[in-house]
Length: 163
Image 1 (tube, rainbow, N blue to C red):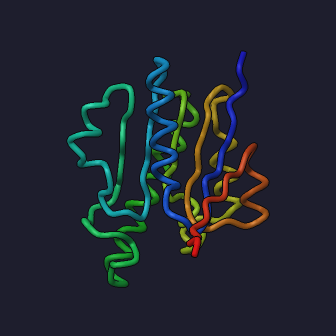
Image 2 (image 1 turned 45 degrees about the vertical axis):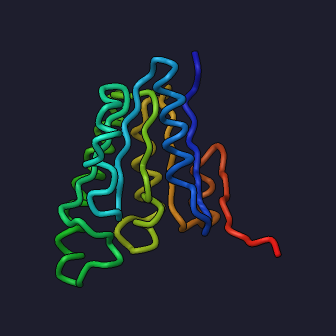
Image 3 (image 1 turned 90 degrees about the horizontal axis):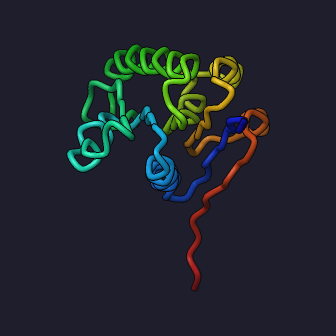
């Protein structure tokens, strides 16, 4: 039986979330189920009509109430949104523990560490709830050695310009 792995897509370049979404489509194409939970992006892709047509194979969730990204929020709005983010983390733990899907993508979860909403230890504890056969992808700009140790494979996406 296959052992589920943890992947990190990180770096300062664009393309981490699209890479994870591509992996989601590949997984769903092979008859497996995918859950995507987005953080820090406002409502993100959760309202996408295109992506909603991919259900039930790919389910996308955002617990954000604001239509703008976390960086754009006022201090008061951020405090409210942190409550919603924590609800999203509780949902992620439930998905991990129940084995509800074959692939769980926690989009921008590494950014939660950067904002102090989640610690590396908190992420480690979350991943310990993982069903042994489930794959998990963690995305975000923030990456340190301790976060890398949580993954079986780390991909760094960087931007550069050839002159």
